[in-house]
Image 1: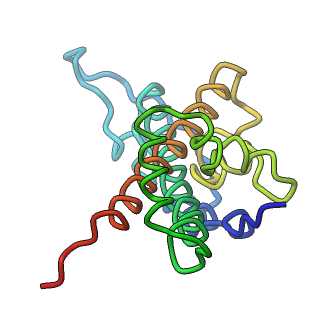
Image 2: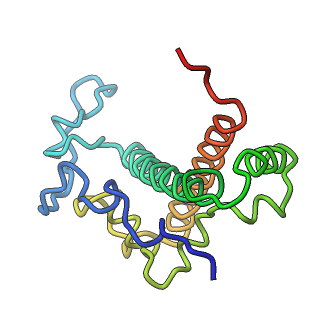
Length: 188
């Protein structure tokens, strides 16, 4: 079994509730439209103390962005752990040769290389890893729409947003770290 220490910890962004999530759930109340029908309620006028957008679609997009942000941080953390074992301080072989091989594999889309990198769907299957519902709640906070209240379409969209952001962050971070090994910055 391969040692995968990044799955033993929860990144700080997933371990703390979302700011403004004070535990009090309040429904946004519709504000009567002004005389001109173009007036839109603002977060301050919507009765939402956390300042979330009043429009349902805007709120959903904000939730998805918080999920993406949390996933990107988790992906960078996973990539950093991977790099320690593959090209960094705990490497037992030639870290530079490994970095070149990984960069080539990423550029070529080589499944033999890509399958060795951390993936979001793998961390989802870990017995001790967070479930999709836990990741959603950790990223969005208790004052937003609960996982249980989401329909299947929204759950799929939230799960896809998390996985895509995690996997993209892993590839970006590993590419950056491998390039640093292959082409180290000259001393100043």
